[in-house]
Image (cartoon, rainbow, N blue to C red):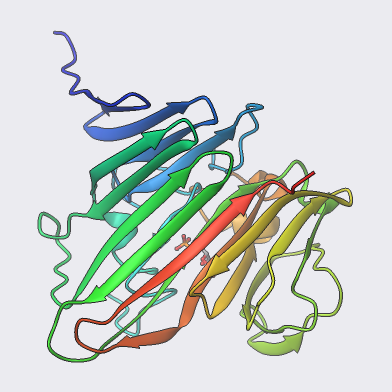
Length: 288
Ligand code: TA6
């Protein structure tokens, strides 16, 4: 029995059906990328030199039963655990299918607009609408657009939960956080960042008032520039081996090759009726 493949194709984007899930594949002279329909999740972004910018767990579950571990999961309409413990951590957006609404493409890259399909899911959202723009070229930009479609004020929180790939976390440092106040979520303690951030253990910190672009360096050489807009905080997470062992879909040594750097609104943002908000994360390579 031939497998039925539904292909939607543009010049640079192919939609394939695989194991019941749609995969949007981007093949452009500037980059290649893979986006899963489930979660609207960017799973892979490779630049012109073929370098993979995103980390994906070798034991990620991709059957739609839980959020895919890696790439860029979207945390929305809340970040972290919900007061109602029957509700999923990090909200619904990464647990539903997203439709590819439009594709714009040219010699510089591909711009995809995706929208979550909450109607055909078990998660009803009545008061907020969401769509995402993913701009792929020589850099990678993700924008979350949230609008209050109700007649009363609505609060939400969110994060672009990006898993960046690194050669060796022990050789990495992050600059641009110097002087920022941060909440160490593991110790539930407020501290100040002094100098560059170098990770050597399980790290789960929410930095406030981060104004400047961050730079991720490997052995002192800047490899990525991470900028954002519309965020009230930047989340830095690496579970190290102790934390990874607690996650069945996180391979035990995977922590060595990833760092989560997330543009986020971790403090709830309140929208008046018809008001909207855009959260943006832009990842690029340093200008030589
Ligand atoms: O990125 C920060 C964080 O909130 C951590 O506390 C950790 O829970 C991580 O997200 C992963 O969450 P997940 O629900 O994807 O396992």
